[in-house]
Image (cartoon, rainbow, N blue to C red; front, side, top):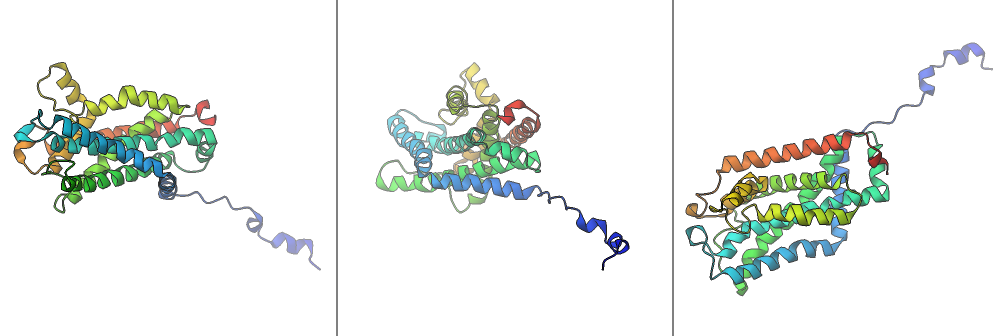
Length: 289
């Protein structure tokens, strides 16, 4: 028979419930990024939309302006526009991937993540890294398919693009620009409740940001417009891509230096992520809706 004295000797700690293990920083990042990738590849129309429109723009504008445009070092318009279209794909894919924040809030998934015992930086990095991977993947598909269009006569011969020599630098810089743009999309999508408002803001803010980055036309000496282009952070991302992809040094000698492009793009990415973490960490009734 068990006596009261023997019961008292049983360690009390063994009967206590252990607190649940708190996940580290990178497990939530991996889980959220994988969720973004899975959602994307289940929606094949997003792949067609993100690649189809930029390729059509490149072919049509290149064909229409081929005879009237002469860029630096006698560069054709399609060759000049090629890095700009890569930046366009990065922007469209990165920005549109953050629309999932609005959808997750409406469906209740985001509220579940916010009450989970994970660092807020994990939520931000998971969303941003997932969007960055998608953006870089689609940009690389275009950079691979684009030169193939020259073989079937849809574009003139390209002297720039993705090669075995510039592949590591190009992929790394694409990832940096994509990371910066996805973090910017996170900042825009976080306070919004409607995808309609997101699309409206993209039309009046993000599209002009791309147009005024030197993607569509060179800055030149166009007065106040040239200053707007120089103050645009995306200008340095496009200039960096142009420097990596262009084989003719004379065609890029008027662009910002490589180190300036790298510094500005990295600084913009750090600022966007810092603001995103701060915004996500704030206690707000908006996050409970």
